[in-house]
Image (cartoon, rainbow, N blue to C red; front, side, top):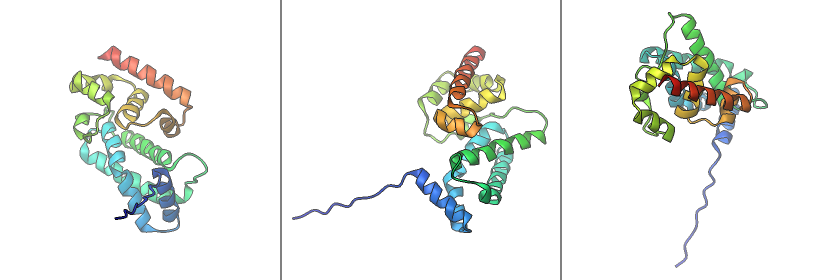
Length: 187
């Protein structure tokens, strides 16, 4: 009896995203939908950590994808990765949201929206007490909150964070160190 072997080629996510972006830029609406599906949960979760109201976070998430769709022609693959470009839209949309609101700090009940895939850092934060961590995180300045969310909640590496926040990788490391030190101080 002979056995056949099936070889499956698994495409790297960046390759898949790049192909979807090219198709979307050429008017393929299905590709836009696939991009939406790939990024929806992560984008909503990031926004939800920044905006305390679920309804407002949903609205901002939809705005982000509308801006993405309208701006696809402006994206060029020769620069930063598509995901970094998309997160810049997210960051700017959250800033726009707060410009139209009274000052408020997001993150209420933020750990309730995490998706079951907890990094060791998140598990550690939860073990010291969700409320303490949330209260401590709220006391940090915006850039520190953002770096902690991107690194430990969104599980981004320093290179990805660098592309998202337009800072050198070395600066990301320094920011991360300072943010964690500040969080330890307030907890």
